[in-house]
Amino acid sequence: MTPLLDLRAITKRYPVPGGNSVTAVDAVDFHVMPGEILGIVGESGSGKTTLSRIAARLIPHDEGRITFDGEDITRISGAKFARHPKRRALQMVFQDPLASLNPRFRAREAIGDPVHRLGTAAERGRAAELVAEAARLAGLPERLMSAYPHQMSGGQRARVDIARAIVLRPKMILLDEPTSALDASLQAHVIRTLLDLRSELGLSFIFVSHDLNLVRLISDRLLVMHRGRVVEQGVAQAVFEAPQAEYTKTLIAAIPQVGRRRSV
Ligand code: ADP
Ligand code: MG
Image (cartoon, rainbow, N blue to C red; front, side, top):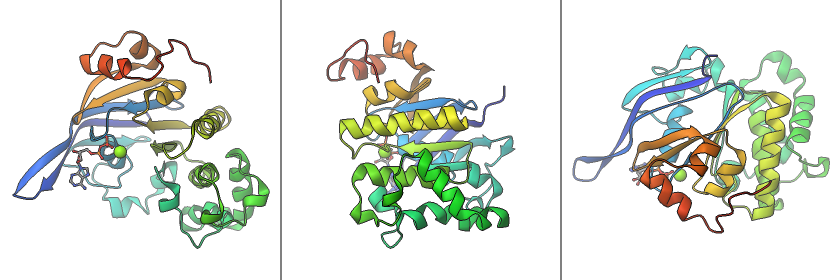
């Protein structure tokens, strides 16, 4: 099987005052197979957000190649990719839905927005149906469809964001700390929703989080980042049970209540 997303030797430097630069992502390689959930973990500042934004072509990178769904998208600029046919197959869910959702859009309009921007004429014609189906899959009750973001709870906003991401049936969703603003029980709900979506739609996910306990519940494979580099990658369970890199061992040792087993 060919990977759905494949990143090779990705490097990203940010300029800093004084003419220097900080290497936020340093020669990183990774791939995601169709239907796979890849967890990316690492402490704050390790380069997770930079890497996922590069993967979604939201920010430019300095070196390396990106292939998505059989196409080399390395040279497509972020601005062009926004209108590219592959864009609809690769969606993103951000950390803070209150910041990413338009405050003037009701849930229904927020979820329908990608259909109007990226959908075909046929899809635009059945936008209402697509929106209702996405809301159902994301577990969003009908009564919330007329609510504005400020009238919803954090968990409800996260579901609107997820419904918005799935409305055009993408192949992959990239989630950057999607649940970090939620309490533990809501996190569990959102995680279950994502797993249901994978079984119903065969979606692939990249799930970025500093929370190892959470990543452990959802990921098939794990990428451990430290200071812009991948220090370890492998099958999630194997990495948790027998970490190889010193940094991974430290991360796992630092997990609160290191239960060896934990059920969803
Ligand atoms: P994470 O998501 O793991 O917390 P980030 O990708 O946000 O990590 O950051 C990685 C590194 O890049 C950090 O050192 C951060 O300070 C730096 N960085 C991130 N964004 C910028 C930016 N826009 N300009 C300069 N440095 C940045
Ligand atoms: Mg981040």
